[in-house]
Image (cartoon, rainbow, N blue to C red; front, side):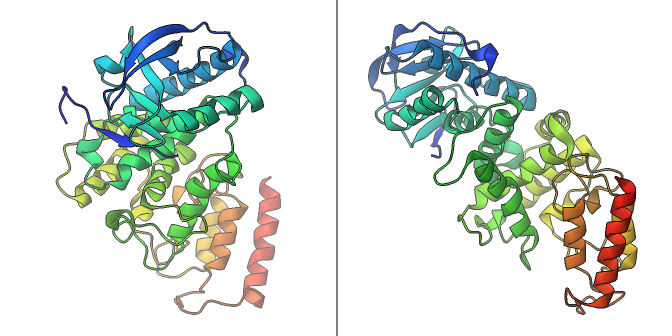
Length: 382
């Protein structure tokens, strides 16, 4: 890639009171990524200008849509600490353009690390209709912003799923931090869509025997899952884990630390850069995410899951949504807290002292006593 011709890649395919400001369109000339010239209606925000083929769109709906994308852009600025490099044909008086076109490299298309997004006309109509008719926001523009804000090719690019995974993860982060009501994705509600990638897929990976980064994202593969999410989606769940566990400020610190890392020569270098940046930002060792231990609930490291491990889990209890607490390793589902869900995973992994292969049936007396004890300790802590 060079400054004369930035690389672009294909994309996937609520009204906030401060956004409900009617916009007035103006006609501008736009040259597309493929060299075609359009006369488009420009709807200007504070960070972006959305260029549409129809100048008669509802000014209030366009105010809401452009304002929402502006907010998402600002969240990306917070995450990365910078803005995309301006590429002349894709700026309008300093604003990054998002243009409705008839042909581009995918449903959506965005330059990596530079300004400029294009959305196919039929998909833009879906984006507009979601806001104008339902007060919701389609994920596509927020995903494509993740292309423009990708600055970590040197540090992570040797593991290719990280490139698209960044856009997938931060689509969710930018929309959540902006307080937007996401539109459905295919047959899934937006919340189901998000949770299935950032939580369910991660759990499928952590509980698949023999799965680690080398056999999944390192090989361009995911683990079996009902919606066939791929390697980039799994990589997205790794990024999102830091945000989920430690919040936006630590997440931004992660990317700040990552930007200071040297260029990776091998995939292992990229994984080490991720782990080192995550540790710098959070103090947490994320090796267990890339190399899941045979017994994730073995909190004392003695190769079994027994009463001692349950004791450590109970001591680390925080409750839902309360942060990872004093022992992040007890957050077995990586969702940012230590709660009943983590206890359930620990119970399911119970082996007994020194008996890794001796997994009792759920109805066994020993496990029943542990569950009763856990319930009692839980009541005492809430």
